[in-house]
Length: 327
Image (cartoon, rainbow, N blue to C red; front, side, top):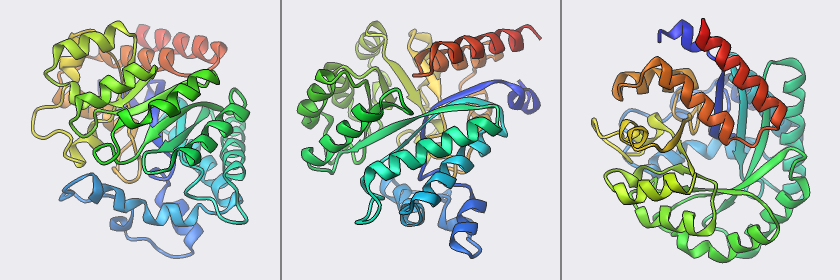
């Protein structure tokens, strides 16, 4: 599929972090100065996930304000709409950007307001995913659950677990996700990004409906079979995975996962930090993983079916994809 057609394709993104996706123009306007791309975008010489995460310093600093955060969410939606992303789920951690005068709840409200404002102006819809963080104490992450419970189906669609997977194993969060299940809060988990298949095992055990990245399943057919049979969707982020050295060379396992029947979606992870768009990601997988045009469309259907969009939005976007396919 050529780039022009990929741009026209109705697209869905499920795994994208707000703080890693602020446009350069928005950051410059907010800071009141020019920004060198190296301050926001990871270099080709990126050595690790820690190197990658250093690019979040400026975004996390400037988002500590209600109006700025609202405008950031609006700008994020506007930029995604330019490439015909029709539905997007944006995730962020409201605790880290809070201050004495700017509460986590203020942050949640601001992002929801920004998204809803963009929906009125652009042909795109969205929801918020609240990130519990691996380095937080459980009482802090309980505050994330409380916010999710309060705003569930009012702009917030689920909870995620993000952060340093290798340092804080997924298995340590059994209590948190047991409480999420008791509160009927759906959740997804970053799992298997840094090479630990046990992280994916734990995410399955806890009841995650989607897992972020899932790269550690590469070559483990039994685990892939169990993820498939549990109807868990895998949110893959190709460019980010190469940048953080989760994969190298020709080892990207997308083709392997699809051939084994896994329910896979393609995402940017961090549009700005990774210097990518969803169109770029789709171009990349066609180049490196022998993905057909028909499979590109199926990946979008996977995404909208696995999303937390309302039934009308799902129906409308599936119709758009069928019409696109028939062209």
